[in-house]
Image (cartoon, rainbow over the protein chains, first blue to last red):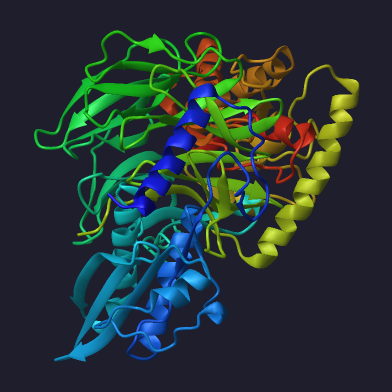
Length: 435
Length: 187
């Protein structure tokens, strides 16, 4: 293991320690804030000069630098400070010139066209150890150059942090337009960096709460009509869409099980909402709760054995964990405030939630037993957390000036920023890593 | 019912006139009631099919046709309001719901949908559940007053369909409501 990786690991450890002692750190409010003064966490200075091979090489480097910057763990250096101008992917860099600007890591590479295909060689260097950490080649169709940049970003992130990346992913969300009393809500999809946004539905019907399968490019979401609601399964690759079925009463709050084989959701009958689960192969449903309270927002643990959900059975909305068969529900929130919208992290480490207290809406995370609560954001209307597939970043919506925007925050609360998507949006859902 | 633009304008005027009549009635009587002007068109028995005739006999600036959507909205009222995070029918909503029940029993061919709505002080999925409770609380009240439950459907819009786009308690109080909508059978 290199010194570089140890340094980043140290940073990750420092983050974990901060979490464990539950320091009451004020959430950041700026559009982009990377607070390098907190604890030992210093973003790693990294140089990402334009890859050789013309404009597409420069564009790929730009996407990589932006991804690493937004993670909060890296500080891409200003290309104007680079002194070695003619890097070749085939030759070792001149480490002295990169040490001079204090670049700890360096990404270089070369783009070529071969038989109509884009071929990208890239290497990751530890500047002070003067050694290559990674050397990979990607080929794709030329229009997929952004995905190549995301895959390189993921490779760099994983090599230097020891954790999986989350850059070659997409986000499904609800694109909003119109005023508050006449909102149009459309399903939309974009890359995790806000690029390539497109609509999946036309806005004729209000859609809400999309959720990704963690195993496939499939989503489940809810459509709300005056005549009632429906839950849909929608395969983004085939375009195939199907209803979960006809139910008496409202159906809402769908979430996939970790293996993608089941959907947990709420069914309302006579005003009472309970949690059901449907096996997608047999199309049979089982009822998991039968309390005369509101039971909703079920979310599976990543091993599929447990479900966290929202219930007001104690008199106010709180979070409960039960077995995936509905057994043994136990309340986990006792800190005061109203807790809703729980989402179990893909690593199993945390449960993210929305908390209302003191007139604020907050996004927070806690351990699955309710311990170590940490509030990451606070605003007039922060809600709807969704996890990046590596469990390090939470996306949510924040309302300001009557419009809802997508934001993200890392699990430490240190890196809070608006998503680089200019439109109004809510209810984000993060895809697993693409294949 | 399809109306031309001119017919719509005429209807608007008619509604304003009716509202004035109705408010005057409220000032002198304890309960809202139907317009008592003698010029009201003859009431047809509920199953009577000749709606066209009834429409043509309406003179200008007349109150809304009894048994119509407009009659229900203006003379009875189609919305009641709830307290924060509550689905209990408030005492001040009972008179209006009683009038809804009376009207619905009088016009027995009508069917209604009750829409439960919430303010923004709650998250999306929780509010869908809360709105469903509100819609069903209204439904249960009307059934308790003798309206056949078969004529009633319910839906929750959660916080998706606010009638006041503002923030703060004034807007929130309006947005916590149960809305009764005639879906069929109105004149």
